[in-house]
Image (cartoon, rainbow, N blue to C red; front, side, top):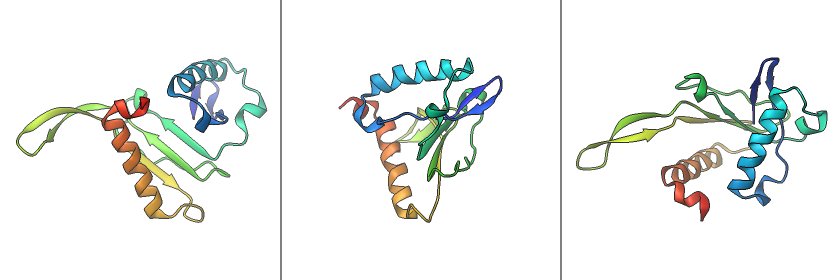
Length: 133
């Protein structure tokens, strides 16, 4: 995860994410973001990552192409959410849309696998109940 701080961008690393619940990750996000903004991260808390999530939607950005932070293999970019008209097959209905983009190292990740990953993320975010199941 990338964190904007008064001293520039820092990228703290969350360990063992696959073993944590969404609630645990949310708490850790709050704690580590504060440490980052206060300049209290240790070197160990910024090493060992393989994937970054960069969310700059809070700054008003509607789309961007994130750049992979070597030696990591991928980065997910999250942009600003906005209500947009979406065709449901019968009519246009307002729907909250959040643009996301994935950049990855093709030496490690096949393009089709990257596309499938984005589809999974999209499906999970389109029905938030899936995150807690």
